[in-house]
Image 1 (cartoon, rainbow, N blue to C red):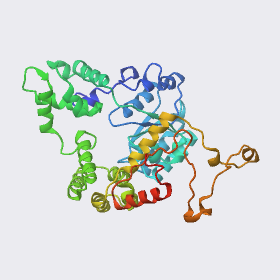
Image 2 (image 1 turned 120 degrees about the vertical axis):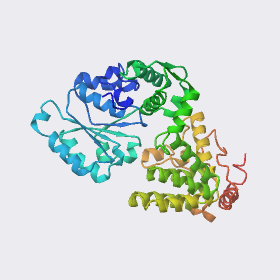
Image 3 (image 1 turned 60 degrees about the horizontal axis):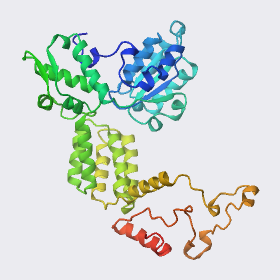
Image 4 (image 1 turned 90 degrees about the vertical axis):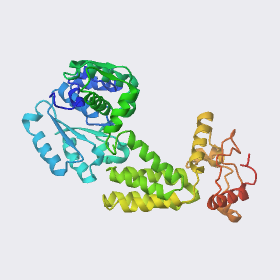
Length: 426
């Protein structure tokens, strides 16, 4: 065990040792109730890397004394799932309740792989615990998601991470034998990005680099120098991941296709999930281009579908095509700003009543209450337009959209001004 990585050596063996996620594992957390009642439903644990999803699953199994099987969706297939289900449904294992099957990164399972779990979950042969860093509403099939309860894990707080550092230094069988002085922590916390596993790995890396010293003094400058010289070229969950995707986004937004395709290549060469890149392109197409070029969103959606269908390495080609197109396209953030202004107005004004003329009137009673009365059907008028009020009383005439200067958006502005005159020019 002493040869295992520090993060593994520090993995808690009981729930009382678990750090963070008080809403789940704390004194009044729902998982405490599961353990007390010896009943656990199938669940999905959703949260960023390194917040304890795998640890929490194994601790639940240990606390309620259930058999525990674990698979990684990166390496496992339908055959592996079926083999575990066949083992799990034997009478000996089912005697004290269904075994727990933990699937890490369940969002990487295809539809057919997720389908293979349905029957076993329904029949109670297994209790599924899935872990994902992606929104399960989008990545887990509806049939499986409806049979699971979703629990969100939060990023570790500053206090959580400091506690983990101090605990490792004082209780780890190896580190506790060394003379370690924890003077500054900012650099370690920054390199970890809130990921407990990365934090402990960074601590271990730094301590190992100081093995020729009589004492280990942990300072920000010393940690930064040590870790930067030993960092991997690209870490998909670390600080460099966020720096490079930030450079990619800003290059596309800044209309530099040469730089954008370079940062794309950096991500691809580093093994980044191509669907993650495709999602960022979808967001860019609306947030930074929008109605300046509506075709950008269509291409980004087609690119996402192509990447999903092709996989790597072929997916690099549509990713490159879309990146270059979006970077070279006209830009506008007017749609992005407009919805944020509208949401701010909703928060400020609350649930204003819908004008009677705009209300739906499917019943006689509603018609008697004047629902829909006074509404003018636009297509009955010249050019399919007639001026009438569509906003609630109190915010009438409020302008929410500032059209950009691109040719397409100026055309939209001209159409709007021609119809509404100066109503929304305030």
